[in-house]
Image 1: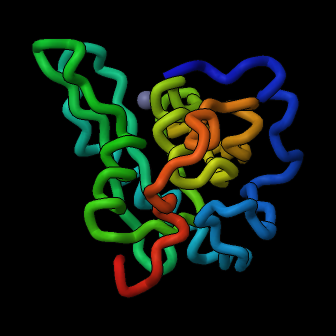
Image 2: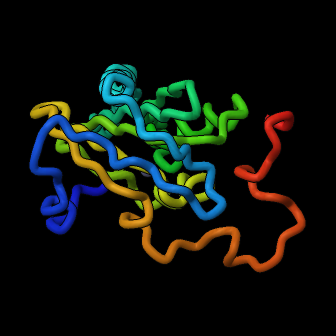
Image 3: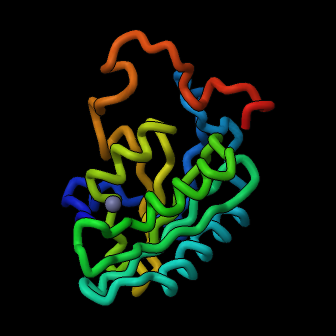
Length: 181
Ligand SMILES: [Zn+2]
């Protein structure tokens, strides 16, 4: 979990609570194009805050909660640490894996709650970009409840992705037909 850069701090929205930018047409990603209802947005943040309380973080004691909004379902996640430190899972990836497992690949936004309102770590940025390169990310500071919004593309510019591998016979998840979900 990386602390927000000073650049990101400057990008904070001047008014609170933050509202998500309407999601525009993607370039093959599974971003939902409909703006998120403010009430649903608040619920997303609340679920991230709640998920944080279930974090298993006896080593770092840095608890993180996430809530991933798909087409119409929210998947929570919390960080899960392990005595074998390298096995630790971040909240963002826990939520993402749950959504993928449920076949929900249309993602609108992910809310992340932590002390300080940190942004996703590099590994999670890469992991999320696999599915929605321009995902809307909302961080919330659990102490001040201050929210900040980002696009994944600004947190992970010039990302390595499926296009980096050249032609591939398997269609991307976002192009799967509904019956395959
Ligand atoms: Zn992470």
